[in-house]
Image (cartoon, rainbow, N blue to C red; front, side, top):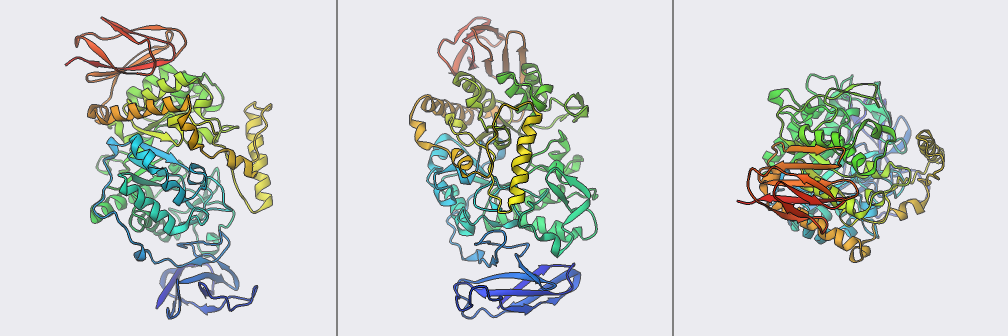
Length: 592
């Protein structure tokens, strides 16, 4: 007996449309067999179906007041896309091989963000497995998957997903994701799943027909906000909490990256973010595994990662955009959009010392004061990066930082990130300065929506005074194809030497626990001369972020020093300082 349940307080009548998988007796276009569902308390409907002869399970949907069938809001599988029937999945049937696995501590981690569709030539979960040994050999500890839930078409970033329980059919569906997670664990790689709970995409989004999943009290930049604090929100909150449990328990993931929490609006006394954090940690204790919840936020609010006992939400970490933006400006000198409010090296030094550049400081981009100081929080509660999917893909042409600055500058920046005070994150292909861009691509089946996205993107960049740039069409298959990584180029220069440098840096970080202890570094900077020194304990990372050789004075109170790592030849240590070639960095270690 299989029991079907759905929360649907809005319709007056709900029927279960159902066919056994593999059954072909019905003529094409004929109506699906329907079973009446019984309404129970709190807007839930149920029906039971005999399993005899069911084969692999059932394809099913729900007919609401005679309309439909629509996919299950909690659909575990959508084999025919966002508009098709849902399919039952027996999660207990998968044969896992990761008994006893637990992820390494987040503070000792190096995170690798990847997009499944462009990570390999085939763009599937199975094809991603072929490159896991490369990530393990690089020294990666956590693989962060950009959203993998069902979204329209076969290619997209995944942030317009609509079936939040169903791994994307084009990637390989539920079993494909499980095999990928299992393969990661066999290689010592933890897995983080990127979840989007602030909005859903418009195409294939049927949730509003079932119940009050969305709120008209707020709006997000991407559409209606999810209802976390108005009438009916208890079941919506349960929907999100069960979604978190699904990825961590049924799919054995090791944590969640929660997208754009600044667009999660919730005035409840106990917010959904606090509840998620508590639920994730309680689940980890029950499962005997280390589980984490990491937020992306534009708020510069340290309360997200402060302990609940000290007035926070209890999340494990949050992304630190200020660090990335200041480093980017120091490298490129770009002043478009939000970059205009960063001065480069001076703000980079502040980010390294205090995490947030905007910690109550006035923001010209926002025309108001923004942020709050982080206080005594460990720096390992923050994720630092040189680039990520947003900062690359939201450029008009999707250029990676390696396509904007010379290789020498990228090597120096990598040293700052990977020996810095934050949990480092790399964007797939960064480690070899991949030549492929990562552009914004979609596969909307709704032509009106596709045109709106295309026109909106062109308008956005024309307003940024990029009128001379021909913005690639997100719907064009070529835009997606050009964004695929070319793994073969890693054997050629300058990619091979860049890869070696990243390996050295990651191995150095792993071998020096002081870099991961969460304490603040001391930072010296000369904005005019273009150098910065980030020191912690016996180690100091010295960078010359400009052309021409620079003499950088160093504190010699600890005696003699040696060059432990150098991004370029020509680094010379002498009493009282170090000489660095243009666009270079070195890690200096004081003699014991």
